[in-house]
Image (cartoon, rainbow, N blue to C red; front, side, top):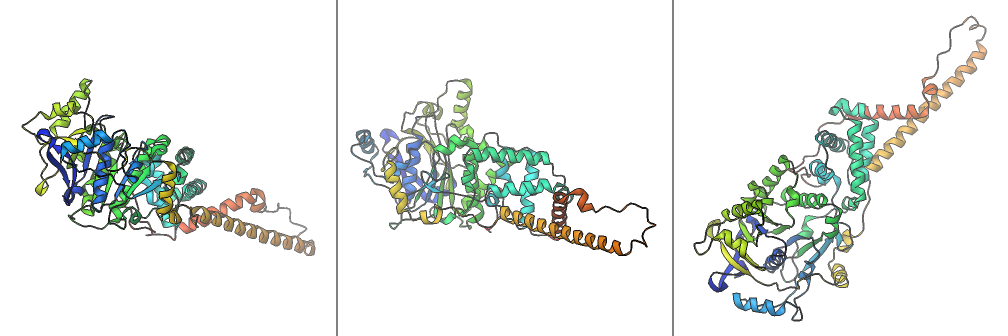
Length: 517
């Protein structure tokens, strides 16, 4: 059917088509199951289906085995015969084909660099990424507010480091306006930034920043481009970095895309693999905001699909919004596992033909219990489904083929070369140099005045012979030039604070900027 994605066959003999209706593709979904039960294939065939329907897709390649979607399957593949047998069982006329793919990589190695500015990331997500305490998060919020009001663009990590150094050196003036800013907290944030740099995350921040339109392209045949983020190295660098980046991207989609109501098909589908990383140790306030984004983003035409081992990994308030579900096998080896299995079964609409709890426990690899939204958005009855084989290659592709596809994408000229434009680091350095010049000129004027005074004393020495009081020292000479420069800088900064107001940037639900600067 042109208005649905064929997922597999269910019912007696697996002959009843099980399909995901495109008009409910933005009602979100869940792909769950233990390791080795077939989640990756399900993810791949859904991506193929959305692409064929003209819907762009974004997904992370955590294990490095999804790149094969860019190449057609092959009769020489070791699973060709099982795939053809399965296709015949479910009534599928299987033809191998490739799909349009754009490769991305935060490190710029296996795909085009994908960047965000520090300002776009916002203090809330950055605090989670840095694992900051509440007082440290407060200091970071002050830093962002100061940057907004003082027109100090935060583009990369060196901008944020320069701003934190500036605040530490002028903590009294900053505290007087924004509340107490502890230099201890600033030092802790700076150390966390150093850890982040050691993980290679400095490449994630900067320009040119990602434009969302480049994730929502279709090819000349009208097929949606599958945007594939190389995430194997990213996961090794830090699961929190991976989860925070995907959450930022989701928030950007929420803030930037216009309302579209209920479209005939999604504008974009976002697959969030290893979804448990998003919610592990997440503060309740963040989970509430994610739930808000998930609830409202569907009206922007975006479908979000969480991929995880156990449905219990997803908070209940979010799980209740996932209308399209593919549940692969869950293993129940412990009492906790058995409880999780029972809870997972209770979220499905019962099927009188079989016990859902037993089916989830017993389905084999490539088989799943599925439920898709039907007419009027009603959850479909649970069905034991044999998932269709993919049309594209199963597994990774040759690096030379990846490089060739990257060259042909047209994105390299836009993103491959980093841009370092005038921002907070340069502007603060310019202010410091200007303050140093002003202080030096002031000291030179004082020296000139003292020389004039000394020369004048030679002419009125007789009149001043009776004076016995000590000569008043020059403050600039006793404190030294470095102190006078620091004082001038602090005073200049304090005066500037008094002239700035109402220039704070409006931020969205997850702290990202409303409208790009």
